[in-house]
Length: 64
Image (cartoon, rainbow, N blue to C red; front, top):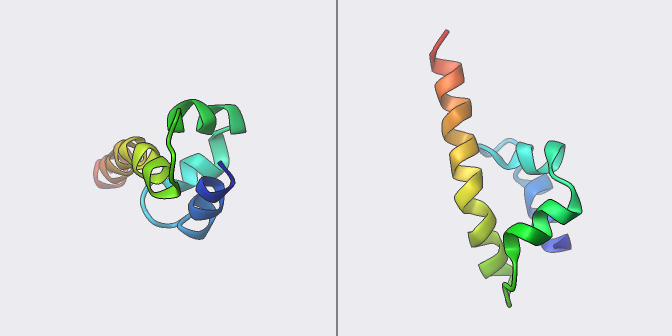
């Protein structure tokens, strides 16, 4: 979980990771990563949702 939080903070401006930093609690991260055994697996699981957040942010920017 700490590695995911650190990655999110490091990539705050990289499409969607800001949502993890700003809105997610530790319990949200733990629920999302589930039984991931590696940092890479945990990041991949969270990335699926981060991509959705990034798409929504892009849509919002382009709709004005």
